[in-house]
Amino acid sequence: NIMGQTLSLAAVYCCCSAGASLCNSCFGTTATGTTGRKRSVLLLGLVIAFSLWFQYSVGPGIVSQSGWVWKTYRAIPGTGKLVYHAWYDSCAQYDGNNEDGDGGEGLHSEALLEQCAGNAGVLRPTFLATFYFLANAIATRIVPSLNREAWPAKYTIFFFGLLVSMFVPNNPLFSGIYLWLARLGAGIFVVMQQVILIDVAYNWNDSWVEKANEADRLSYGSGTGWLHAIVGVCVAFYSSCAVAIGLLYTHFADCPGNTWVITLTLIAVIGLTALQLAGTEGSLLTSSIISLYSVYLCFSIVSKNPRGECNPRLGKNDVWGITIGLLLTIVSLIWTGWSWSAEARLDVNAVQAAKSVGPASANGNDNGENLNLDVPFFEWRRSWH
Image 1 (cartoon, rainbow, N blue to C red):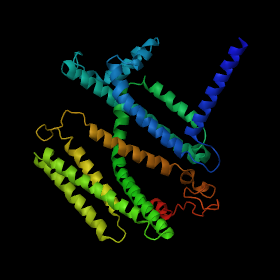
Image 2 (tube, rainbow, N blue to C red; image 1 turned 90 degrees about the vertical axis):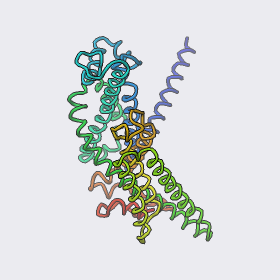
Image 3 (cartoon, one colour; image 1 turned 135 degrees about the vertical axis):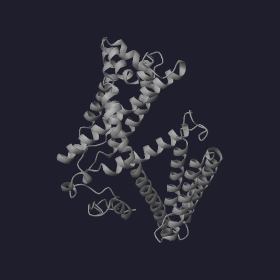
Image 4 (cartoon, rainbow, N blue to C red; image 1 turned 90 degrees about the horizontal axis):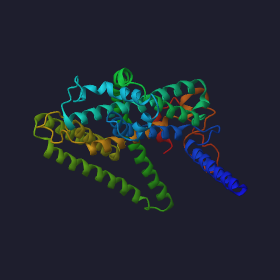
């Protein structure tokens, strides 16, 4: 008996130690001079994961009364009915079995009902993330150290909010008020996404050019590999643009509207490339990335055409569009969380105390490149590449 208790205590200790090590890896340190960047990026990643889960599993499972999430809430006395009506009532119009529904009959109405619930499910994690980051920004403005502290409590509050949001009806908070705010924010995010891609492309180009220069300083001519890599990436991106535009003309050019959109995209790609080549500070890698992004936007436009004769993909799941859009969103959110959550950017008074996010000098001392808020952010980033 004593031996069993000893082994049990040892197992509990190992589990607690492993859990503490995992939490420390995820949450990072709270030492002075650190920031909450890693933890912010992790939270953004969790928001994306939960949004996809709510859209394709939780929401459809609740309105169809299937899945382990629904069964779990139904097993708790008094909660099953609340959760069901919170998700179902705003989508009842798509239920063909409902006397007030207009979604048709059979599988068609069931698919529309599940799609409606899934779309409403996405709004729950994103609403909580929006509310959290606004509250965290305000709190950090008052107490800058909160940006790096109390992250276990922050994650706990976020997960608790997800559980509570299951009981909140879709209307009017999620499908009404927040949906319109999200649409406005999405428009701003699309513009910001292009700025992010430009900054990422310039930093990528400058980083590889700098690596080529460092290699040449050690051994002249050894840095050409990095320059060849830049050219190779540009060729790959422009080749992808050419192939994609050809496919768009082949499959979506049956209507004049689609043809105009594709042609304007082609003109924009040529114009961007010519503009970059004409300047002395141009970057062909940047123009190739923006050109590829423009082709993706063109595909998104023509593949959303509601006319069947203009859109051969109408009614099909846009797997490629969802995948590419998700990858772009992940890159943008990682860039946003990693670049803008540093404590020095949140409090002007903390600039002198905060360490630079640039690389340290060889002797371990600060390299003197502290953040200067009077210099534009993009220019400052390039200064230490």
